[in-house]
Image (cartoon, rainbow over all chains, first blue to last red; front, side):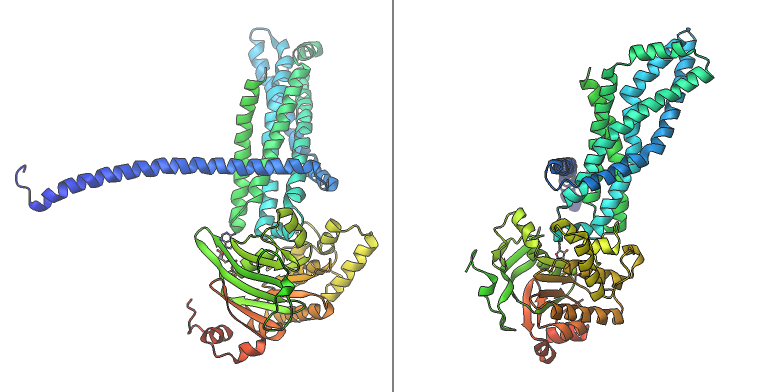
Length: 283
Length: 267
Ligand SMILES: Nc1ncnc2c1ncn2[C@@H]1O[C@H](COP(=O)(O)OP(=O)(O)OP(=O)(O)O)[C@@H](O)[C@H]1O
Ligand SMILES: [Mg+2]
């Protein structure tokens, strides 16, 4: 089989091999280019999102103030999130005290439940869960509302009427998110600890001092402030991502759906990532 | 002439009116898609000009340029005494205060009722007492035949009603220029006739007004226009009075007027 190659195969061999090499290089090139493009896309998106976040905030000090719109959005993002925050915090506090009680009681340290729950809630669970819940509830609604305003030309109509849509639509939502998130987090912390107290004292049989002493001992103002600072950042993330996704929606009803889902996914992931880096940076 | 001057330095060859809005050699491309290719157009003051042309020829792009929503790559655009191409975003926003725009799908704010939609431009740009706002909005809703619908929200309105609300909103600050982007597309023949009449009536009721209408509806075009402009490939192919268009034996014009599949334009 080795010597009987026809002229056609003689020509075909090297050509095929060269074709393979070229194709291989092309493939690598395309892959590198693809990754490069993807990263450029990400950087461009982050840049545009940052731009809209920046202008939204800058507009907070540029008249008109639009207090009424801000108040409406605080009502929507803050007040209307109360039921879900109350429920979530009670049960988070409850289950956390239940599980830590089960662990601590085996070496007679059940008095650590109050302090553990208190620190965990104020530093981590309060801000993070509030951030995720509010992203799911209000972030999706913001993206859907702005997205449908975009695809039905309502944002163009604002422009056409010489009203800056960033000032009119983005600023109130961003400011409201930044204001509402720490408030909701504070409520989450307080109600979560209350839920923990009820379960610990009235279900698991801890005495009140057992629960309270370590709580008061371990939870510093610093823990609380750290948590509220995180909530502020999460509010900024949620507001920016939701406004950005909604504001630049394309492609009709389907585009609105995509904007809504990606707003929730991106802001949730961004909140979790930011949470780690804040925890890392702060003592 | 470039950069300075005024739209009124140009005279419209069709109506003999001075220009209110003037395009001179305007080019606009999106990437490698060259939409406007040297557009020269005089929109006569205090008249109704109708722009016709096939879907995708750049009619909406043309309108967006005078609103300053798009900027030309080359050429000049005058609105009254102002030349737009050298203006900052802030100055452009100021130019928009002189315009009213009726959107193809009305673009009403669906978070507000009819009254608040029409009152919106007043609330944003003027300090009026509530009674004055109510009087102005009421008068306009009367004019467009929607008295009594003040507290309805846009989703409760039919397409025709929405467009009329959109017209009332566009008129509420007494604009010098009124732009309509396909005001009758998607309406039934009767509503279309009603909308055409409304456009003509509006023009008559506001003597200083300059109207620019984009339309596919040839019947309306021939009945309400003072000047008709036909865009082909991002340039003015023909302009003239409705009578000129009716009598023209240009193949392109004939095909457009009759809506025929045979002719120089291919689907
Ligand atoms: N912002 C934009 N970015 C990219 N391309 C655009 C943009 N706006 C318009 N175009 C393109 O420019 C061309 C002209 O668009 P335009 O909306 O002006 O068409 P039209 O004449 O108004 O058509 P229709 O009658 O369907 O409304 C289209 O091919 C469109 O894809
Ligand atoms: Mg159009």
